[in-house]
Image (cartoon, rainbow, N blue to C red):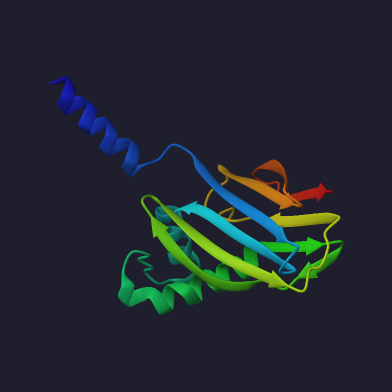
Length: 161
């Protein structure tokens, strides 16, 4: 009986996770003069926000929807994520996504960034989905990592190096 309860609890926990969090990592690659960005989000939350905003069913695990999903994710991220280095906005190019277990990883890159003394990151990912959203931001410049936790409605993190 205990094993059955445990299996039920695991299913319930997976079906309705009790927290809403994303992790965004911004890495300045001095050798390539780029800013590399990755965002990790629960895939079911991302699918729900895409459906809510674009009125389409986005199944991030279906290869036949890859082109549609890339277009949706690119548009959504361009509206909800921005990076500025040394006070200048960085044009981020969407590179793609991959689904891993319960998460989706989205990748972006900005070029022409030789040095970084300050990095400002604006993220309101999934703020339009739930006011319980927490966005964790990591920034790495010259191998030095700094982090910030943004509780809704906060959406700005600034780092100095």
